[in-house]
Image (cartoon, rainbow, N blue to C red; front, top):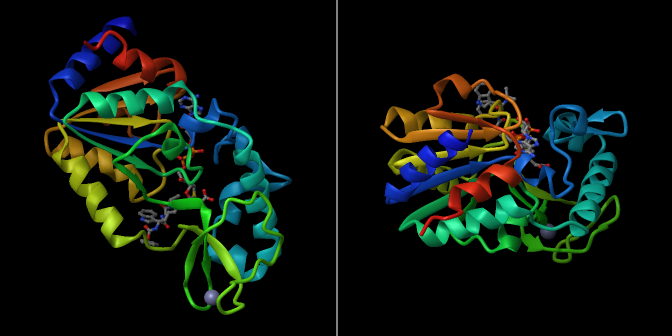
Length: 243
Ligand code: BJW
Ligand code: ZN
């Protein structure tokens, strides 16, 4: 592992353009549950079953309970050494883009700047009637929060299954990935599209791709580096002793 980390650090050091894709695994060591695996359960529900427009249409109060639970939990935690190391990496690389699937806001809290939140942000809400988007950091919004402008029902400003990503953000993510010399993929199961394809597209355009995860994923065999372990331990080692 030491050898691989050193080799990847050398690739990063030589790269003028670096893209990073993160998923729930990078926030796991902060205490934020992941979606899949044993941490992906809320009450008796699969977290992924609640992250759908169908679930919200059927039972908005249940979906809001789930999101209020996550807002409360995330309001009490903070970023970890992996988030912090990506802030350091951004300061070391001439052209750096961080693409995250996470809605927890921990990359922003850590200080990342060139950040694309492709699945939205938990702290933003959107009116289902007038579409107005507002920032609201209160941990508990109740189970039927209403728009201050028009009285319509609010929903979390996140991307659920079957919903399209913001086209501008997606376009910028594809561009950053395919233009990168090195792309890191950290803490994602790589099963959700279109995010899971970004690193494969980067590789097909000649980038060195590296995965950091507790376990192998469907993309592992396409990777130039597959580092198995905790993001909070491995990512800081990529920037240690850089200069
Ligand atoms: C550690 C660690 C540690 C733990 N250190 N590692 C093509 C083919 C088939 C289906 C589709 C397709 N194109 C689109 C689809 C449909 C769908 C999709 O991909 N489905 C698949 C599941 C089959 N995609 C969509 O619907 C997307 N929309 C779209 O494409 O629109 C156009 C379209 C629609 C319909 C059909 C075709 C085209 C939208 C996807 C939105 C995903 N939304 C969610 C919820 C966001 C809001 C919220 O957070 O509440 O996003 S679902 C959930 O999954 C969330 C996550 O961002 C996302 C990814 O999860 P992630 O981050 O990978 O987490 P986990 O839990 O899965 O994995 C954690 C990993 O960390 C694990 O690997 C651990 O080992 C690791 N780990 N601790 C390092 N300490
Ligand atoms: Zn409204």
